[in-house]
Image 1 (cartoon, rainbow, N blue to C red):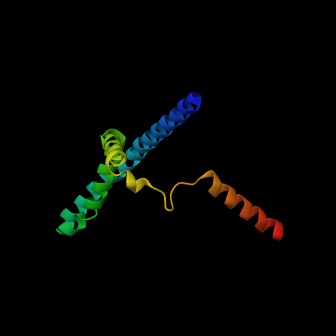
Image 2 (cartoon, rainbow, N blue to C red):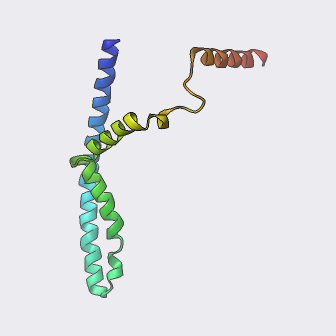
Image 3 (cartoon, rainbow, N blue to C red):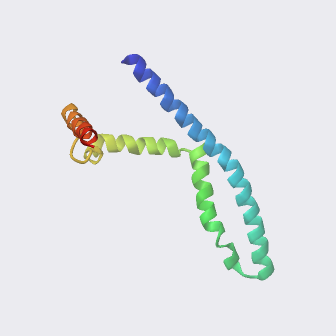
Length: 120
């Protein structure tokens, strides 16, 4: 059981590392796109003398900020802290509908499914 727990933790750590690495790689491409879009939109707003051209920068900046926080900031620590808070103070939110599955529930489902297939 201890080996299984260690293996599960190692797999979780690797998945989290992959998620962070993916976010950092995505940030490179999105950051380039965001920078280019900001320059083009600013140039367009100045040439047309219309500040409304800059509006797309607002949602793009939110996406960029989120990705940066995920890749290099403290987003994962804040998520972890909130998850710990939910586990400590709001554990009723984690309950499954109709409660946890039991062995008897699984056996009833297995028998009903096997009867369903044998009747056909």
